[in-house]
Image 1 (cartoon, each protein chain N blue to C red):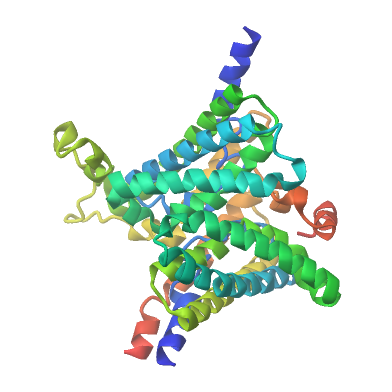
Image 2: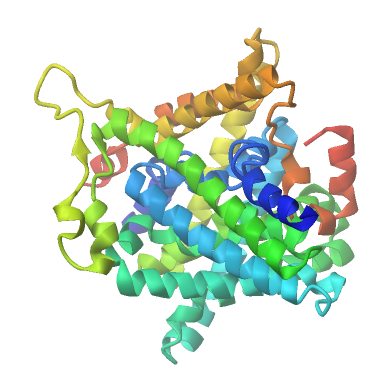
Length: 253
Length: 196
């Protein structure tokens, strides 16, 4: 019973209390880059979740074999293998997504969430719990991307879920009755979409506002607000040079 | 020459790695509090970007493409970059202590920096030749430095401001980054304008 409850906890913590993007402030690059449309965000979220579950399972299964001195390179190899698999699958089955995610798809390999979970969780816990942790964290990441991209797409492009068909191309043509998203602001009337939100500045702005809301909620619940911890949130911190560690201690970075 | 110049200007202004492509956001938000750390970090990034491109380009061309193994790019590049960074760190520590003290401490952080892997991947997807790849990497590094240094200045101004409590810390930093990014939006089309 105790086992089961902790399982549920490992799964749900990724959504709210330890949401990787909004609470731990990890994986900011893809969060800002691919949230221009909801469909991109979902694609990125699913891809990262698959990599996260796979790498967590393998790393946790190998945790007693990998010597701790070379663990980071070993983790990176495992993660890179899964990224390559996902990359090939996406290229084969959803080529449109491969085009729109572009360089950010292979860059999942340097996503701090994945290496961070490998280092902080999978290398210390049994296989099943690590898989659940990976799933929870991956879905938490997807949820955060979904929040960001919904705001940016609805206000910035005036559509919601545009391009669904390209994501569903895997299941054949015209699935879901040919549903291809809603058009909320057509742009013909007086109301025009605010294009700046899907451009680069909009990404920073929406993310900042989202963080402010989350901090406000956290404050109400008496929890510490999310902070970018600089080096200390970086999975490389443990292997980092001594000088850098001193720098963190003194708060210079 | 014209191509090179336009490539550098594009990488610095219109396709700035941090502000337009969102690569290397972690150091941008994490290490930009002080001007000297921002400069040190970006110096190390320029150095590693150039070195990583110089090493991965021949590997890609003469090993992976030749044997039809392009699908191994992600694995090979990340390992090569990680090994390279470690190697450079050891060499600098042993032979050039002053340089190590100013740049070396940032090197391990760069291994998992998406900007370095990103520049290598982008150069390959653009199918640039060796010289142009190097130019575009150094340009991307310079763009990184420009954004870091500018933003360090903005953050120093923010220090003394009276900010609502819920906006303090990361949210206001992101909003400031958004405004800096708006200013870079103004460069859209400038490079094409100069060279057309």
